Image 1 (cartoon, rainbow, N blue to C red):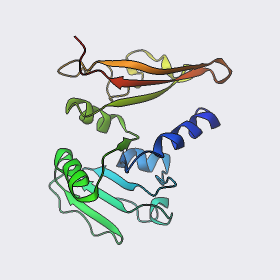
Image 2: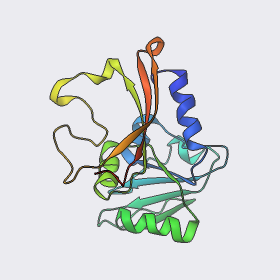
Image 3: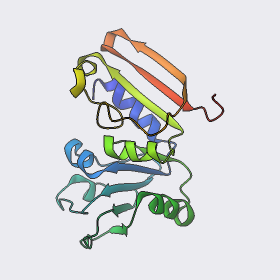
Image 4: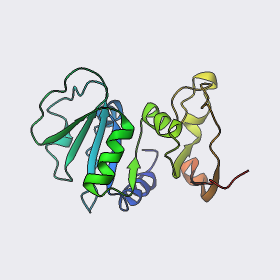
Amino acid sequence: WTSPEDLHRLRHLRESADAILVGRGTLENDRMTMTAPQNPLRCIASRTGDLNPSHPIFSTPGGPIHLLVTGDTPPPEIPGVTIHQGDLTDFLTTLADHHGVRRLHCEGGGQLIRTLAELDLIDEFHLTIAGHTLFGGTGAPTATGIAGDFLTASRHFRISHFDPRPDLGGCFASYLRDRDWG
């Protein structure tokens, strides 16, 4: 996290979610437990479903864990985890139709965000812009994964919140999807 304020902002964003979604790589790299006071579903997307059973998500109280396996390999059995195999669109439909998910909060990684953007399923986008990570040329990280690998169509958003924080060396910004643009 760039600051305690950044972590507080993330926790606040989670509070309105029925489910939190993250890619396996981000889950493992950040050692996420994906908790919030209202115990939203904790959803993980993975090609293989190969998760480390000692990961803290499995020993931290919270909402039910759902694992989406997008590859063809049969997913492993993981005690206490509901396994889904298929594509992201079908998984999201299942979450809505069978688990009452109306508000999904995705915390990355880039490939997962990219897929949601390609499917035009992002209604809000929240960024912490940190000056120490912003400038890096063609190899700089982007919200949707690979720099220079553009979406097939533009997605239009409007700024809904902008909070410059010079004391933190960056700013917080939020965007809302503008489907009437143009």
